[in-house]
Length: 239
Image (cartoon, rainbow, N blue to C red; front, side, top):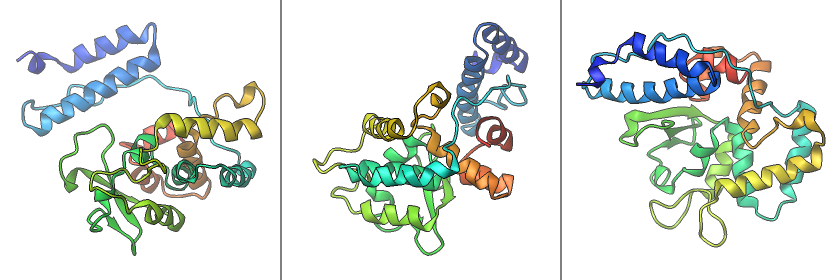
């Protein structure tokens, strides 16, 4: 087939071609292609992933963590927000290091019969990032702080097994736009100036990673905690 004819050299040539004008985008293209090839290898449609061992472009982190002294103030301002469901979603991001997409896609059936969570040991199974949702073996086990587990307990009981965990008072799921708007509103009360432009709605995950790194957490453990594929990705993008 055409897919079987694609070699590592072909991928490398494509990566170099895109790199000439957009080095970061070139990395994203390879990451997307690698996901496709991994799935084909898993289904035994291909013998190997031609994207493996490709040397990608070095990237400068575009998001920055919140300074330690600002985090308590950020939490105080979250407490003053009217919609505490959205505020809890943001708190959960700071406490878990989860991606926004993972948080907003959590469904009540993951916790209905405690199939995907162990409240005593403190871990939750999350659907793998950007992969098809098939079975429990395809999920990533992530350990959470007690405060993060408490947030899940507050929101886990929803009507309908496919209902989202973070749901507004009107019954509609919390959206990315709501999350982003609240985050930016709180950020605007704390920061002014061009030097803070990289503090975005995604910085909660970066803040979590930096805090764990500052506490000298084992790199492999932190990589697994954040659902990353490698410690290289952790070093280049997070901490």
